[in-house]
Image 1: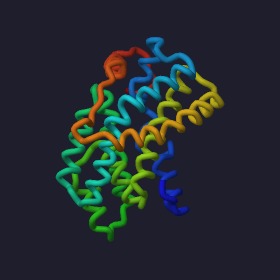
Image 2: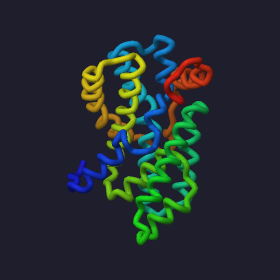
Image 3: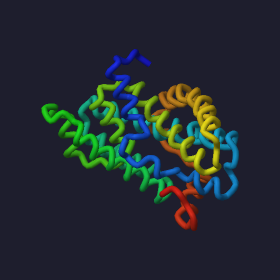
Image 4: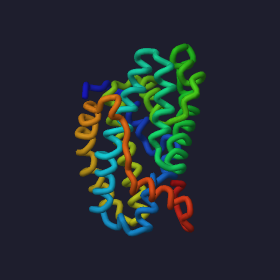
Length: 230
């Protein structure tokens, strides 16, 4: 990753912060049902769950699509940006996972409308006029508004996903805070391999199928007692 200025570092931390008001803390992406069914009951099991998610889904769909959105903005290609937003939605394999993607995307879009420099007519147009709902799309836009490089955008996105899963697992399994931090420390070593793998995914190869995750998410819709929305 190219060196970031102090301001860019601060902006990246802001974009990846758990305090960013997009509601990510309310979604477990199917993990709550996996814990309920006894699939994920230990720190090691959670590490494996997240690792498989990164290798099987994020590296093959989320990151390539995020790269495509970032480059569409660079190229001022609004048609590609909106088409890719639909593509992102199509990769969400359950109603709840799609809900999480679009609810977080709409929340980030609302935030960007308040943050964007009104004198920057291009950024203002992309944020205000283009009807893109997915979180990945808005994360790419936020990275541009915050002046981040592509690598910073990609690493920040993968970090955010890992952090969300570890935070959810800490509550659900449950894990101690120290166990959670140790797990986070180990999982972050997978960010670079995930991104490097994604860079070799051709456009006609973008996609993923995670049957266990999809089933867990679908079953979660009828889970009687739950902490999360997905």
